[in-house]
Length: 210
Image (cartoon, rainbow, N blue to C red; front, top):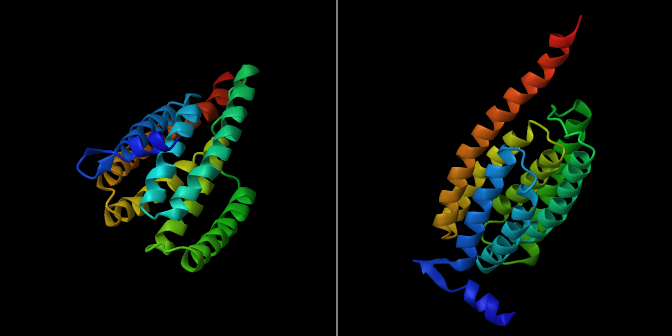
């Protein structure tokens, strides 16, 4: 294991090591698959979590590193959720976030941000605890929405990308910041694709009504 970790820390291009490179590649593949509602986004996402856990931990972004562990657990849940519906040949439909879900998500996300900020400030040497905490909490909310195929999950991912790009530049993860810029563009494409499909779903009953 030590030899594997040492190999992943070896530089590839400039300051970029193998862990960051593999994390960036699997991250791009994951977002591309999510936009196409392909179930393989979940196992690819688990690989991404492993590589980025190491990348962020070594960069002292402890919130983002810990987030990868939570992502992995949520990834298993999302994978099972999508697979269970697919097995019944009843694909989980895209839908809007309900008022009740917003009423729960917004205060929980805000509280999580404050809690994680406090923990990072007091228990670690993180140089950017506020940004780190914000990315963590918004990412968790977005992952929940992704697992439920909520259209607004894309808006949450867009917010994560906007925060993450300058954060990773500050921490010297410039290639990963560039990948997040691509994520931002892909999220916009994914949002438009899901919105179009949602409109199509809504039009079906009207089309078949007598």
